Length: 125
Image 1: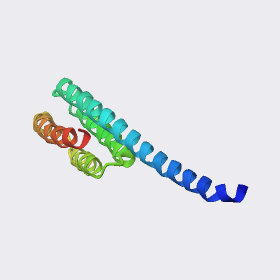
Image 2: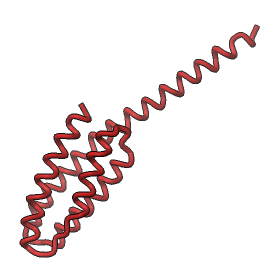
Image 3: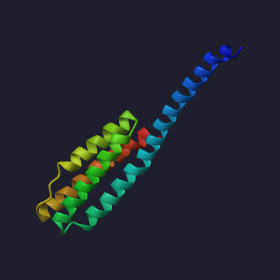
């Protein structure tokens, strides 16, 4: 009699495990949707403070790019991952050496993050 329930138990276990994967995927997406905008907001605030300090601005941009790469690695949503990877790469390519670079970089960060926030707003909704 007990052998009849073995297939049912195996099926129930498989459904449960599949569901857990989906839950983890949803949690990863939700976490990325919370973390990424915070990183971007912090970056925009720091860039505004460092317009007269190119070295500090360059470090802030690099730190944000590193954090965004970490978020992208955890993101289970393809659109979110691609958008985050793209912004991280764009930020990683910015080099701030002079005060003029700082002004140009601040404008680029503002434009790139605005585009990014539009993309993740769609991916996270």
